[in-house]
Length: 368
Image 1 (spheres, one colour):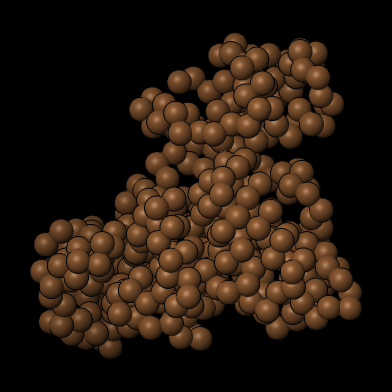
Image 2 (tube, rainbow, N blue to C red):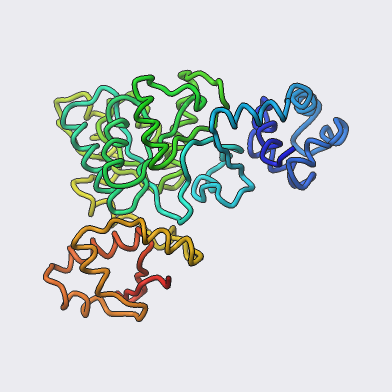
């Protein structure tokens, strides 16, 4: 049985989350070792006990590897496990990350930072336009826009990102149960230009209790969460709270004080969330050098550059740079723009993984 299928089996066991799986892996080396363990060996494992060991043995009897493999293949579903190197780095850092994530589409080979854009389903026209335009700009700059495929703000964020770059849609159901159903076509487009992702196995229906776990993955994948319109009781605020617990940034778009859709976002700003009026407000809060991949192999880096669509200003600045380190002032002297504008473009190129900004305002290309 392929190793990934052992992980699928483990993820189906009630009461066995990633924390307890980690304890079992310490004793049995890998998922296959857990599969081959006897009930007595499992029972003697730290933190497992007789009840859970019985559940593990029971789940093994009910799991048919060949049938599971065929089901995933037929549904065109791929999966990644906690032990895979392509498991998203930031998601792996949260407490109790999902042992298995299922997806359609592609997880990017070259590390690119993600930002969550979320908000209410019952949004205003202002909220729709803001979500669409902000996601479009973020994707153009190289961010992967993460949202929940819900009606309203989420839908507009995905649609905006698809215009210029990549987006991930996170589900609270199996990949064979897209919710809401009217977003089936949107999910297909996202899978072609990003990925539709879930921690839930096939045939799992969307249920209210699934969505907090979905929101936790949205924030876990992302450097920060941007909230655009949210009433005081909103799933978007749950996502923002997860971001805070995970040590990530929280941003909020200010709204009309007379609209209930703005009550939650304005309250977030009162509580310390960064007020966002433009993309620069987001960039100045992020320590991007901590998240950019430093060990990209040549083939991956070349592939990324070939597919990169730089706008005219980005190309102008990029073409001035070389492998040799240059001072910011020298670059500024060769362009007709203000220092703040150049700083913004350099940040965009850094997000795309094309340049490095070194201490002392020194800049160079990443070696290809």
